Image (cartoon, rainbow, N blue to C red; front, top):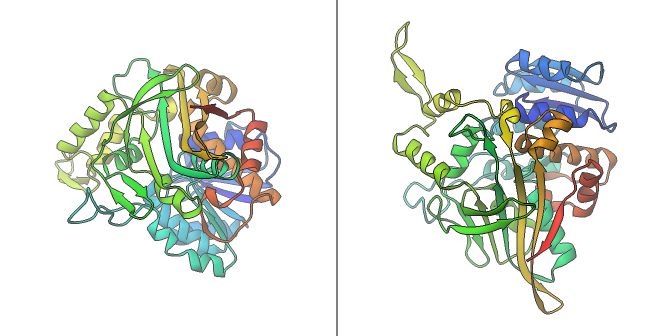
Length: 405
């Protein structure tokens, strides 16, 4: 397998360090708009000749397609932020390569009823092209990070192995991470965090389909395992709610994120001030007026999450809570994956959240390379058997857990 990895930020760099320990691929080309980032990611791997660095603009479809062709890559792995999903998705199809991402094409709220009805949903643009991918015999595996990704694999495992009927699948994400020296330092891309947290959250119910609620609605306290403890979780827009019902039969699907009150209040303040906007505003500059995106300014003012590992302490947990019946009796479980920041920094030099995101697409690529997973069209993780993935994740040295509730 020959892979083009686009994006050499925190997650992209973690992908290279995880993949370097595996033998399933022949070449991984690491490409970034900033060539220094790509070169640094490759240089950190020493003399592993399977890796090469390139510069590419993720928004330039022709350039990306050309890079895929020049290096004879079989698959494009997208490790950029969601703004670049569609150009990279289209570039892969144009070049005849497969495609894998960790976040799907962006949503747009309903223009009149944003907190009741869906507008353009996450992934709609990608699923609209499913027939073209299937006709070409090509695969776009979408939403294959940790959430979405591993959480969706857990949903499929629960449906296949643990339940006869499922009432609700609820992804629940929480952590007890702290960062020395910062009152507000998101452990993941603030651009993506703002996008998913301030958009109208989506809920799925059988018979009603997908609908929206207000941001941060339906708070609940969830008890996370391995010492993390109780964290207040709220509804947040996330791909799992759009993916799971396509392949798994459940009466209700939700996603709730353990953000914490201070984090929620900060995001609300950014929204009130208009600092979550992506549309450029004009500000004075030394050479005259300059157009800048308020959200990009916020991102520039905050520390790069990839650099926080040495100051970070605690654990992060991604998991899927499932409620239903087995053999006529009620059952409730939480399938989860916990990463300790001290372990990920010691073992890989990567902070816990980016490492936890990065390991899953590498596992998926290995399953595709070996034939344990295969398919055509635009497919989510739920479209594939779960056990091969979960067994290989454990082989990678990062086991998952199951707790009866």
